[in-house]
Amino acid sequence: MTTDNTVTGPEEPGRDWAALEEAVLAATGIEPTPAPAPAVVPAPAAPAVPETPTVEADVDSDADSFLWPSVVDAKGRNTGELARPNPEAARVAIRRAAAVTPADIEALADAISEPEARDIIAQAAGQRATKRELNAEVAKLRAHLAAEGERRQAEHEARMAEAKRRRENRAAAALERRARALDPTSRIVRLAAAERFVPWVAVLPAFLAAVLGAVNVGVSLDVLSPGTQVINWMVEPLLTVPLIAILIAQILGAVDQGKANPYRGLEHALVTVALVLNVGLHIVVDGVGPAAFVWAIVPAGLAISAHLVPRLIGNTRQALADASTEPTPAPAAAPAPAFRVAARPAPVRVDSDRTAPGPVQVKAGDALESRSDADVLADLATAVQNRQIDPGTNRPINVASAESIRRTIRVSRDRARALRDQFAATQD
Image (cartoon, rainbow, N blue to C red; front, side, top):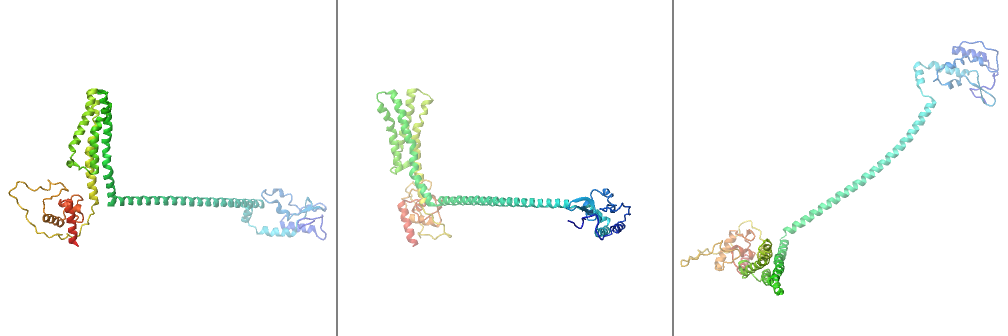
């Protein structure tokens, strides 16, 4: 096989190789040298071959393959011999060389070769593959971060919603507690429960004192009188049971409280005897010492209950009665007197040295039954006109409440109810 750059024989018929060589040498500026006799391979036509070793190392050696074709045998194998140059290729090379400037030569010298270009292309392809992998990793990380951010945002919103619900529930509970606290009916319910149970709690010290006193006195009397053990243990209950019965009667309303209690002196006597028994027996048995006076705490329980029960009963019931009174809103202007009663001077009794009790001498709630109906009506009209303060509620008198009328002008409950009904009839 032959190509444009290969020859198959020493000579090509019909071509003057000598003249062609002279023309090439003349065009290249190389002087001709004497050549040996013509041979099969016109080797003398290549005077530049000895100069090829002087070419710089970075010059492409394959660039001369078009100018100096190699000789191949019949099987297409390279024989290592160079054939005569192609004149057309020489002329093209000459025109290209003439058009190249020194600057172009430097640029061509700095230009990359084909292997370098292939390496660069391969590196660029590897970089593109790496970039695609990195972009895929970045996209995956961005998707993961986006999902994680959405999850955290959802959890945060859920926590905020839960905290908001808790605040709203606490606010609603606080409003409900405030409504219950401000509701008069709730206060009445609490006071009713207090009036029912608090006095019974105050009786507990008396019960405990009765049990402890029975044990203490019984043990001490057993030492002094061993043969009467049953009687010894019954001595203390003889004193404590009547006192507890009086306290229970006060709770149930069978006995009045305070100075109105007819058994007040008996209570003091029972507590005193219990104190003498609990302390005196220990002094007789064990002698005078600190241990004997410690047992004074037992009858102290009786005294505590006897003191607390009547006062707690009175205070709780008074508070319940005050809370049960319906307050009347204060009018914008002072109302006209409900009754028109001519003011009469108080009668002067010269034949008596006793004077009427003043406000300090009469307790709140006590009725001045000595006054006539006209006097009571005049007092009520004056109280309404002057907006007299009810001592139980610290508000102006409420003519719609019999308790408020009773406390303000100090009349009995029956008279207060009659005055309330009479005032309501006059308003209609």
